[in-house]
Picture 1 (cartoon, helix red, strand yellow):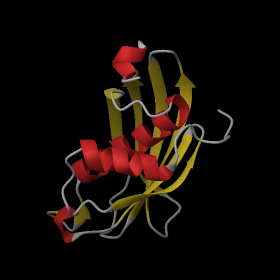
Picture 2 (cartoon, one colour; picture 1 turned 90 degrees about the vertical axis):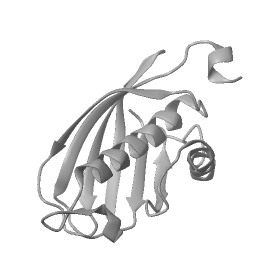
Picture 3 (cartoon, rainbow, N blue to C red; picture 1 turned 90 degrees about the horizontal axis):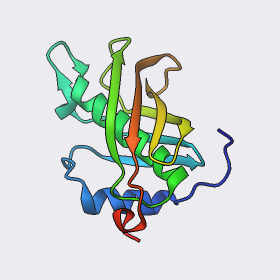
Picture 4 (cartoon, rainbow, N blue to C red; picture 1 turned 180 degrees about the vertical axis):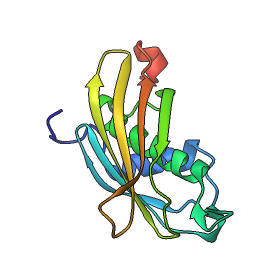
Length: 148
């Protein structure tokens, strides 16, 4: 997809998540970049994310991947709070160290009802991906379903 202006601004997305998603207080994140079909989200490191062996847990990375894809989806379809994850596959590639994480999402195809995207997660300061995910969001079809 061409990276033009996003259909929503980062602040609107952050407010939507704060108002409608129950994330733990340890999950401190912010949108670094948002363009049409593209998002970059940074997650601060917290000791609560570490599992046995001193690595960042899979559920933490899954939540970051889903959140980053949600931002990319809304960058294309606009502020549609009822867009929901319909499918996500995640692949853990390398053991991430306990540091902040950066996730990027790119929309591969945006249809009228389904939006497909690709997510990569990196440990901050490292160019090698630690996680790769693909996912699909279902977007409500009618204006009433979209909350318009």
